[in-house]
Amino acid sequence: MSQFSPILPTTISYRGQELRLDQPLVMGILNLTPDSFFDGGKYGSSEEAAIQRVQAMVSEGATIIDIGAASSRPGAELVNPLEEQARLLPFFDRIRLNFPDIWISIDTYHSSTAEICLEKGANMINDISAGNIDQKIFEVAGKYKCPYILMHMQGVPGNMQQTPQYTDITSEIISFFRDKIASLNQHGITEIILDPGFGFGKDLEHNFEILRNLNVMKKILGLPLLAGISRKSMVNRVIGTSPGEALNGTTALHILALMNGASILRVHDVKEACQTISLYNKYKSVD
View: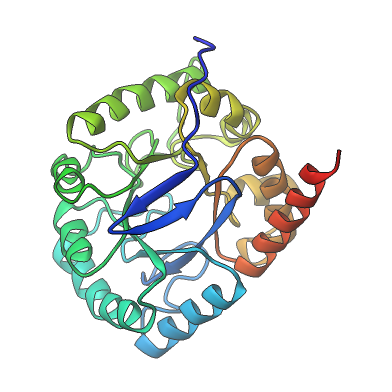
């Protein structure tokens, strides 16, 4: 692997709004799905519950709210875009109305859902499939010139955890990202955030190798990294917890992710993630 180190972007912007990336940020998760692995069904049955959840995450320090209406837990089937939009759009409108200045990421692999939400005021696309499920999503991102979160996944949610295999996972993810970045650049997209996809077509050892090598990816690719570790099996399988008991383990891995170069933590627990970042920043500030 080349050791060339491009200059890491310090901001991303969209429609006159700018996010600084010189300090780590927290992305709060809002699942509107009935079957997500941790909080499925908790916020998608009531607009008021969803609004209260967003208010809580914003007040606790979330800079970005990531809204999704299609579960990507292991074994989940792909959701039809019309079903996804029926779950999502009434909530989206209320959230944007109540929080006009918060950055909203739309967690979708469907180009039609992404375009509707960008029209309604979303700030970025978070696509777990990197355009592999719906290739038109790159065209939509190019049309709106919006920031794009590019994630690595081996397979699709329905089969991704069926014996994932790699020869050299870090090199293979870097190669994957290089190809996808080139394609996004061809569509006019230059503001890209990389998500190595913890738990998406990776076994336990793969996940920890990725965590250890985040800085390698950042140095070679020169783009900010998002870490989506919150309450996942890479926590629970090591310390014997369930997702509901995994906050302490998640925090421990968040510290490692930050020390290894993560710019954004995608989390269920915003207050604790912000506290983790404050402690990390203090540690970094001491000569």
